Length: 169
Image (cartoon, rainbow, N blue to C red; front, side, top):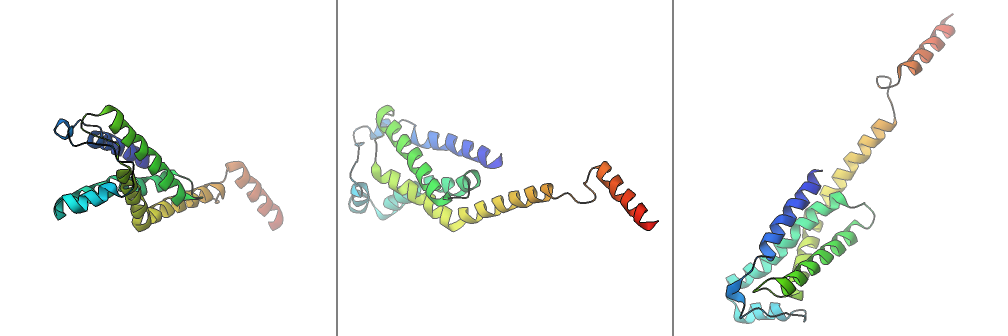
C-alpha cells in the first residue's frame, strides 16, 4: 500500500511538473523525434550548468519508477517490466505535453533520459528494495502456512494431547 501511495503521489508531482503550461516557451518549443538531437542542442547552445539541469532533471524524473515499481511488479523479468512501464508512461506524458500543453512539445530525448533514470535507480537501489520487500512477503507467507504449536487450532492440540496420554498408559 505504501508503494502504491508513493506511486500515486509521484504521479501527481509528475503531472504538475510536465503538464503545466509554459507560455514563455511557446516560441521555442518544438517536437523532437530524432534521438540525440536535444542532447546535442544542450551541449552546443546551453551553458554547462543549464545542460546539467536539463539532463539531470530528466534522469531524476524517471528515478522514482526504478524505486517504486520493483515493489509493485512480480519478480519475474522485473527489470524489463520497470523499463517498459516507465517507457510507456513517459511516452504518454510527452504525447500529452505535445498535444495539450502550451509551450511544451514531445521530445524523444526526454523519454530516453526519463527511462534511463528509472533504469539507473533500479540498478543502484530499486533491485535491492524489490528483493527485500518480496523476501519479507515470502517469509511472512511461509510462516502463515506452517502453523506452530502456539498457532494450531485447539482441536488439533487436543488430539495430540489425547495421543500422548494413550502412549503414557
